[in-house]
Amino acid sequence: MSQTLTFAEKIAKAPDFLPINGTDYIEFYVGNAKQAAHFYKTAFGFQTLAYAGPETGVRDRSSYVLQQGKIRIVLTTALKSDSPIAEHVKKHGDGVKILALWVDDAYNAFEETTKRGGKPYAEPVTISDAHGEVRMSGIYTYGETVHMFIERKNYNGAFMPGYEPMKSEYNPSDAGLLYVDHCVGNVGWNRMLPTVKWYEEVMGFVNILSFDDKQINTEYSALMSKVMSNGNGYSKFPINEPAEGKKKSQIEEYLDFYEGEGVQHIAVATADIVKTVRQLKANGVEFLSAPPETYYEMMPERVGKIDESIAPLQELGILVDCDEEGYLLQIFTKPVEDRPTLFFEIIQRKGAQSFGAGNFKALFESLEREQAKRGNL
Image 1 (cartoon, rainbow, N blue to C red):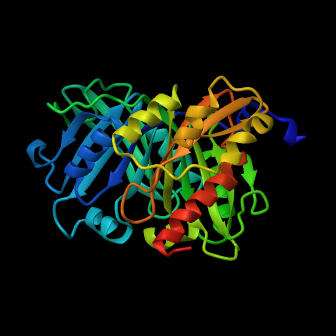
Image 2 (cartoon, rainbow, N blue to C red):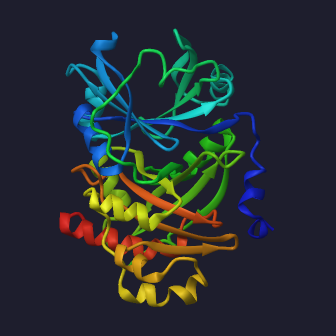
Image 3 (cartoon, helix red, strand yellow):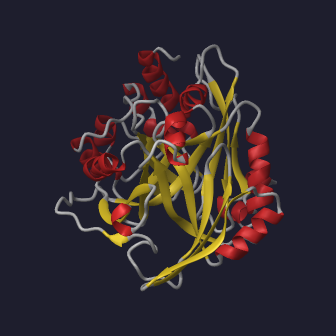
């Protein structure tokens, strides 16, 4: 029966005790936030929005808030070596610490999730300034990653209290990125099912899609994945775990170099993937190598009719997949730091609500070519 349900029907089965309006922001802990902000502006077309640091009364960190479309990223660096932020960067390298969710009631979100077994990270608190108030709370998810619940209906400032609007003379043009489509987490051996159970029980999410090692494998490696979604589909968190293969999978490589579980990639949506990817490439963003020519020769037969010409997709290495509801176009960057950990996905949905299962083999073989260059396959 479940096979015949649409994604919308599966999502509707979620017990909606935790209404989520979408991603509020994603916070990275990094070694040098000032330089990281410059990179995300230059490479991905983000704009400066707000800043917190010693100049705004914050003594232990500096944080730069950047925005593009509905996507907000916060880049935070420690100002002293004994900071938990510095410890996080020392262990994991630059990486995602906080996946913040925009909610109607941050206090209720904390109460509902902690009574179901969520481990507290930040007790509910209200912070305010001349622009109003923000209520927030937080719990841990996999690894050291955190879900913050942000309630901002009574706030009209740039970002939140403690931050000041930041103007910059350097304002590169955006790349057409619109919103966060999904964020993927990598967990350790035999940790996917407990993590899925946690999302179901603590967050009220439902499993809308599953892949096993028979579906996601190459000659050398395999992984298993389950996609978790909240009740309106605005928050989706696929969870990956490694599976046995002849050689080390990209999930194992991530876990080795991140030194633990964490966010593997952030998928951001665009309305014109060809234009976006051309812009990002011109800005210096590096993408995984394109699949072989046969991939594009077989595309019409595999996917059916699409609106786009195949030539520019092939030129840029953009992948295409379909489901019962339409098709999608996607491409993946190389890791955006020296450790082979976090990367980005650019995705354009043309009706499809799935995650590109038909592309996994092509994607993995491309990832394995990069792994082999690093000596980690």
